[in-house]
Amino acid sequence: MRKEISYQEGLVTEQKEQSHEAYKELTMLRETGLGLDKELDTQHKRVSILRTEIDNNDQRIGNIQDLLMSKEEAIAKTSMKISECHQIIQEQKYTLNKLDGELGYFET
Image 1 (cartoon, one colour):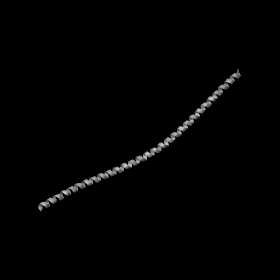
Image 2 (cartoon, rainbow, N blue to C red):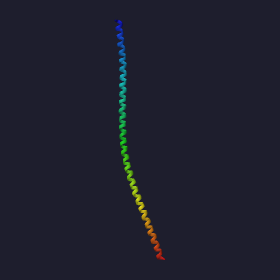
Image 3 (cartoon, rainbow, N blue to C red):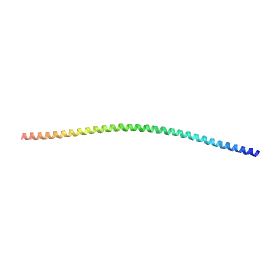
């Protein structure tokens, strides 16, 4: 009977040690889980911030593209006006040369 009691006490002691080790491991796993949860929250916030920055950059890109199109239209209009002015200048030069020729004819 004493052997049985001693054997049972040994089993109880062994089970307590295993339970204590399991509790330590469980506590360590909980702490690791909490650390991972904090890291996950941090990463989630960073992703959210980066998405907001992407949206802001997309809006800026749209604004800059609109401005670029506006400037290109203004340049095109100015180039057309310059071409028209060159055409008018050429016509005036032609008319002036023609008048100069007629004036030379009348002078002679």
